[in-house]
Length: 333
Image 1 (cartoon, rainbow, N blue to C red):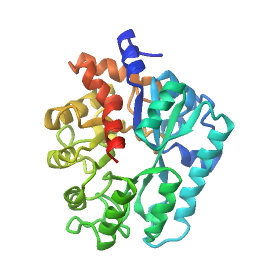
Image 2 (cartoon, rainbow, N blue to C red):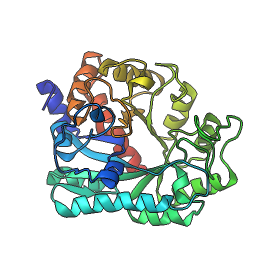
Image 3 (tube, helix red, strand yellow):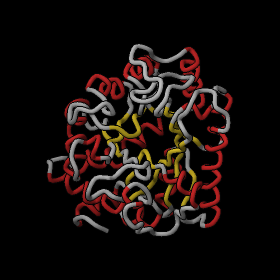
């Protein structure tokens, strides 16, 4: 394992949970094997091949949220739900091949059980409500298959609302009436609402509705770097006030610079604004991003822990960033 003995000890105590990696779309497209350690050649390795179980173990991880992706296109398009099911099928098949290596988990207690058993936990989150094809009952079906969060938007408007950037962007409009129904269905089912990619008005309306903690699974923050993808301090407070957490993305274009220190800069800003219950990991590995230097895959996570220690962040707070804040949200949901 990379990192100092102190960082390695912290990861042993707080096995990391990352809120967003799009690995299963590569399994669906190309048969990417989660059980094999990959060293993908450039240039492909720049934007894919970041996550597998051997490197998760080397990086001191306990669980990974796998994002379920379908093409964000015109609302009402059919076949998008099928694409989500096919990615879940890929995970189910991977687990069936080596059931002692990875387990599908839904609850915080199940994540802890994986830790005790020496098994990696796999959690599921959908990126974009367009995958529901305008049918609320599809959410029930996905929840029954283990989906734990739903991102309302991706890169296009859909039945629920409007994106921060992309096709159909509208900064003046918030959640649609259907989107409000969807929000209520999520909370009824215990599906966490993910506010990544949604426009600011929809974001704030969702937080105003929330009776359970929302998350932002992968983002940067405007207080650290000015970019359309990043959220402001009012949004940070809105999520934190409802008990949620914010996953910091590992993409330099949204961080504003290359290197682990850029990730620390964003995390420190969240700590300054909302305190230690706010930040989490939201890598966006395998999401067609170029990860920042030092965090090209999970093996670099102890180096991030070392950088946080060097920045004066306490071991207790690092434990919350790596694991505790996500576990709290899971328990509340």
